[in-house]
Image (tube, rainbow, N blue to C red; front, side):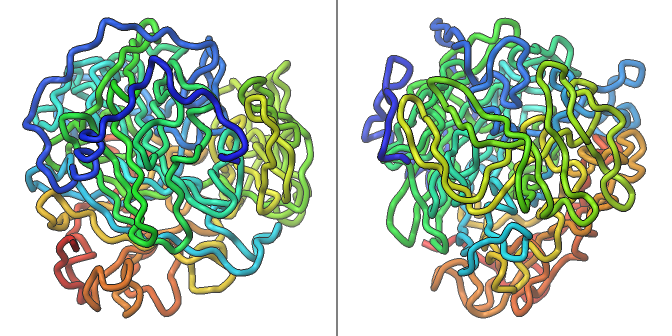
Length: 633
């Protein structure tokens, strides 16, 4: 679709990236970031929000229309406010912080399912300069099926990503932030914590287009984007602005470094979310070098495809159209973002995020139900942006299972109610206590957005394009975020990489490596799935589990040291250990860390909706016969 239509791609909001800046961005992973420095002074220019924008990534703004409401699954998962009668000053692990609630956005529960590995290091620049190597998965040769017997990667994870805390003095809790400095506090119970945003370098699997209301840039190739999410409130979610709750800056990684459209929350338009001829495309099986660095020009992400030789990159700078947001007015100011911390210490976190990150490696799951058929047509209609008439709310058969011929939905925006909403039960889905979309209940109100298998005609801007879906797929992201009754493919043991030819291979990961080319000595496994579990008591951790109660399975991280299973060919020595994700992979896995037990226990001292392990030696380079590694090249 990228070659069949285009929008205006440059205007006053964005400047052409100079060649010198491009070279600086691509070499930044090997260079030292600038010394700790105050945030760049704000420009007097004010960005007035468009009527349709990305000022609330979750799409529930009380004032503005969301540009891409289907993308709420790509936002950051916040924890909720501390009960006022329980708050008092104290250390980050004191009894005073035991009572955090779940987060609501204008009456809608916001949650995610993000199994992650957090990397820990006290080495200089480990909090702002890192390099990963990864080999992209290959899908089965057979076409995926609507009963889940053959599965592509896009049905398992809508966005594997790498994460990092970012300075944003206009984000929660509205305090100054010194880039690249451990002087910043990220403690959730600290009113003086630094203003923080969350960066995710996201990768989008192929097969399900268009990106504007689905997950893919292409039928056959991967792409990637730099996203930075902020939260517009003061400490403990006081004065949370309902019009611009979670603004997001978004830009695809481009071979020329120029954003496809305005990245800022205020000015984002259809071009922002439409890959163009300069968007980096990645083939299945390609080997990538992924660099995150923080030169003076701005936080820089670069992906070099070592298989094809192409590089895509993006600098999160004011010159490129990035902006922060005024929590009182929602107006924007051109802003150059920088990493928050100097090192990857355990306490160096984003104070408002559910995940305890950190330098994170993650998989975004819980957005995949396959269906025998679809019902309750519910078109996406944003004239001038996208009109997609063949979109549905409800999954029939497939992962809904025997005895449940039809799943959740449809929904009425007039009455704000949905038919047959469900939630987590002890042995499977149960009825939701409410049918109201604005009840704040933690329920799956509908299966949509759902797209029929095959091709369909979609209007993007003023152009007609052909969109595609590999199967009848529902993303569980239109009226809530996620598969909250846990009956989809993400929670099926036979769907994840396990050595079968009917499922994709795992993404292979090596690293991260710090600015000196050394590995991070420690890790923690974590997931925020418990916050999305209806039966999880976030006050005391009861029933906060992985897998969730009633789920058949929960995927986990593994290591292999088998010959031929390293990232790439010749990059790493024979016997080097490599990260995988999914299930136990026959003939591949050598360590599974207790499978789901790896995620540890609810963190009662912070937020019981997050499970996290004790700090452990990094298994990629410690124990199990894994040799020490250093960054190749």
